[in-house]
Amino acid sequence: MITDLDENQFIVVGTNLAGSHGAGAAYQALLNFGLAPGIGEGLSGKTYAFPTLERDMHKRGMRGLEKSRDRFLATARALPEKEFLMTAVGTGIAGYTHEEMKALFTDSPANVVLPPEWTN
Image (tube, rainbow, N blue to C red; front, side, top):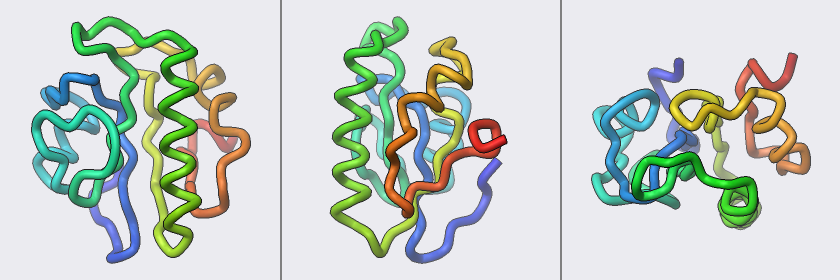
């Protein structure tokens, strides 16, 4: 669990598109890293919200995840001086396996730090 961030770091957490952050890493980001209520995707405070659930809290399909991944990686590439510390997005409430989610991020730039579950 990430509990502290350096000045140049952001935490990447799994969210829902409604921006309801009631559990898991998203709730911790709401309390500690400036994730605003209602933000379902993108930068907010020291957080990047990565939606793994739809507005109705159903699991997002792979196509939706891929589009969100592309937007996230474009943000990371546009901010090479920043470091994005990923949590294991999608592997909690959304129910994806670590292998499925890890496969989405194989072409991540160097400033995206994948979670330990995806690097072993």
